[in-house]
Image 1 (cartoon, rainbow, N blue to C red):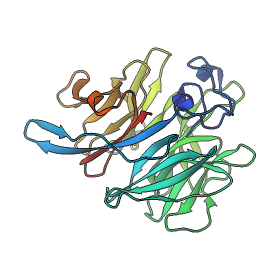
Image 2: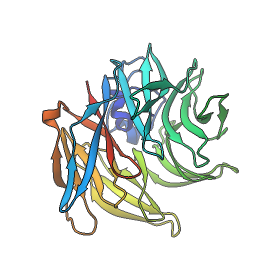
Image 3: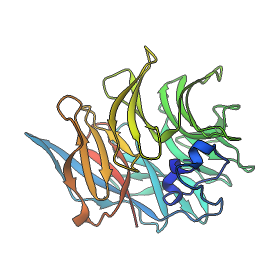
Image 4: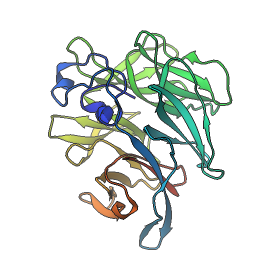
Length: 309
């Protein structure tokens, strides 16, 4: 979740909560109003079958029936359920969709708003970016099977997005304030000690399969956005590949192939053999117009995609 200039271009696609952001971020896209209505979006599931010579995709199947904002899908480890954010009656809560039963259940139901559901390393709790009554954005956790929420980080704020590195380390997108840029930080959960590793990151943070690294999009300028890798051992940042203009959402297949969508088309980049993005799927006939977020199931047999209604 997030509320910024280009970083929640969900402002047209998510309009979360607005907190002041730095000049560098403001130069990319104007901030939405705190009362702005987020654009309607749906989540689609595509089955993936690995075949000799490539992958075959099934038709996109819509899993969200509610007419409104449905976004930020997260596969649970067994690949059978998806957590996601849905805004209903101007209230953002977390829902779970069971892919077998096709049933939807509500995970959070609070006066506050919750975004960016992520299963924690303990497998028992779901971490969320919570917008509190006074507008503060901090990281909270909810027991997956019900119970009272609790704070994860009391002093680190305002949090936009997060990625668990291990059970005591987080990568955080922190919103800038008072003219300062948004930053990407590594935070120790116990001590809340933070290390800034980059300025002007984008919203998607992903672990790179089979490597002790995670990836992020670095917004070097309005025109130049680059997917980079941060090595958790050496603390060095390396360049992977440029994004399409204005596109910041991507995901990794378990095999180490990188995915990115543009309009209704899906592209892949295999670091071992590809020099640039290669198109390998077109979902326009399935009714998808503009794909934004994409995420891959743990086994790589399903892809969740967000597209406008």
